Amino acid sequence: MLNNKRELQGTLAIVALVLAALIPLSAVGYALRILPSMGFIIYKEQFLAFFLMLCLALTFMITPAKASQKGQRHIPWYDYLLVAVALGVGGYISLRYHALVGQMGLITVDKVVVSAAGILMLLEATRRHAGWSMVSVGLVALAYTFFGNHLSGMFETRVFSFERLVTYNYLGTGAVLGTPLYVAATIVTAFILFGQLLFLVGGGDAISNLAFAMMGRRRGGPAKVAIMSSALFGSLSGSASANVATTGMLTIPMMRKVGYTDRKSAAIEAVSSTGGLVLPPVMAATGFLMAEFLGMPYSEVAIAAAIPALLFYLCVYVQVDLEAAKSGITGWKDNLPDLKSSLIGIIPVALSFGVLLYTLFGMLWSPEAAAFVATFSTVIISLTLRNMRLPLKRYFQVLATAGEAIIFIAVMCAVAGLVVGCLGLTGLGSSLSQNLVALAGGNVFLLLLFAALGCIILGMGVPVTATYIILVILVGPALVEVGVSELAAHMFVFYFGTLSFLTPPVCLAVFVASSIAQSSPMPTAVYALRFAIIAYLIPFAFVFNDAFLFQGDVNSIANAIVGGVAGVFLLSIGLVGFFMSRLSSLLRIATIVTGLFAIWFGAATWFYAIAAVAVLIGVYLVQRQRVQLSSSA
Image 1 (tube, rainbow, N blue to C red):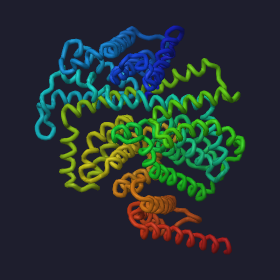
Image 2: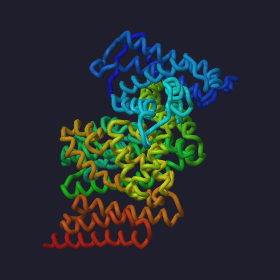
Image 3: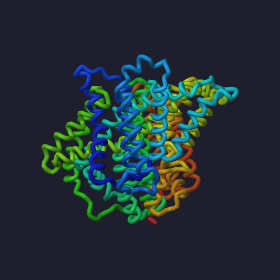
Image 4: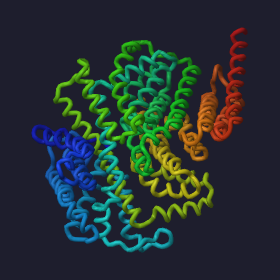
């Protein structure tokens, strides 16, 4: 996400503030069904057109056309024109949708003009927020749909007129105004509002203080603080690079001071921040989209994601701890918060999260309802406690802050919906899936490699949410066709789309962390790949054994957990080359191979899982004896 904003003053600033606040307020109004309760029937597409209208208009008000214009205090004439067009397009659809929906098959001049203008506005807003990469994806999809009839073979399409192309994609229910934007406008908006309010009333400081109090004094303390705080912040923020920029400014210098190298400090922060995107209960925005696409409660998706995410963070934590032991790195002893006061300070945050988790997992409410109730409870708690109480003006400002934070995800989901609409028109999704299966010769592992490579390549220039949407339409059906469960297929695409933040050459989280640590990006990325190694392995593991996704009986799930944990420990020990003392080259190779074997096969039967645990115990005993002999000598 490009970080360039205007600094508007006076009346313009007030107008922008009101527009920003209207974005989450419109979502709340739609979720509470305020207009239907007053007798007004509202189509979902009407609401989405209004919601997108606000996002586009505010984009042209506060985001300049060029990054060099950052900090501008005025709006150029051409942006006034774009604001007017965005309001006109959105207003036309919102007010006339009742008439339009009855004539959706009839193409008229007004529909074509409005749709074409809307697509142009959306692409320009996308360029301002994410650069040309995502715009290029949208343009390629449109060009392929329009000119695909001139191709041959599997890529040949029917003839589509320009009028049908634009009206289907902007007014239809399966494109711009489709599922991705709907999830962004309801569920994601609700969770962003909850997160912004929680941080406003001191939740961010409470989380940070608890992380420092619990982990700061341990060996390698600042690195463990980075893991804990980045996991919690990342799950709420939904952006790996933004998470690195927020928490890394504090944790990376501290890691360097206690003895971690510049490259390892940056890598630890980049990996920890990226992992937050796959960590329940929030999982950024993509988990909610997954639930919608799969047609299952979000609580089931979050539960399914728990074991892989916890194994990911266990792998990072064990490597960080062993690195500290290997290099003699101690904890941070200066000016750390008191654990008792930190635990007391986290209680209001825990209460808000408790409401969220109880309504989401206990009462099985919809995600947006659970998040709105948690937000309301946070307001009540903050008004009750004097140290959290804020002036009413600040509560309104948090609406505006949340509105600005929502824009990026909403625009990305809308342009991803445009791509989905083009794929739906051309039928490329189904034909490409069939050809991928044929190319892989029905080999599941080879098809998974194709899918992983496609996710990483597309994700290098495209936000993870958009990557997931596009790839799950293109590749997901192929995975399901060769026997992969739908849940595992979607989770596989999600994981590898997320890993584009860490995978060279375009590894955004690593670049941000490297700029803070002043380290070379590519060597830092190599360390990041090592710390995040389990994230590249576990998707293959849960495809072949969905017990890792909490699917199956208790015995299978317990087997997967034991085998996975043993494998993570063995793999981490081998990669770092240290347990209780330094490992020989032969023992390092043995632990790495055994760790990989445990993750791949250890969860298949108890025999393999127990064998992996036995090897781990054996390495421990050998290492302990060696340490004892060294100390006695």
